[in-house]
Image (cartoon, rainbow, N blue to C red):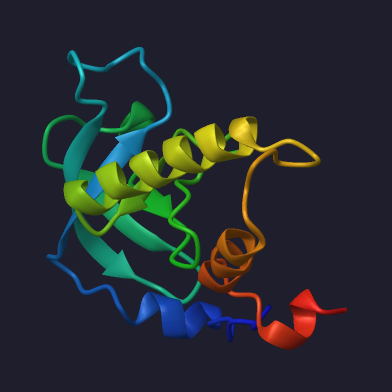
Length: 138
């Protein structure tokens, strides 16, 4: 497989600007409203390690500013598990959720020896997943 070049913290923080609107997807269903488990947030400060934001709908606990890791979007749980992830938009969040759901269904459907799957289909699937021909023949 081809390896992606990883971004440094400062490079990933550069893609955010103060005032930028993002989408916060809560990992908790406690405060969800029907199908919507996310909120629009606004970037208030951009640092190299954290990007700070405020909710447009409600304030975080204890009135502290919330922050997320610009590399992976994970919101700081202050010593506990992350309460959610920040995405560039609601569309990106929904696409990520759909991709994860479809990938899970595909993994469940796979067996150690997939029956009735032609070799050319397996080769095509490997190429789509990023394997090059040399890796497939190892």
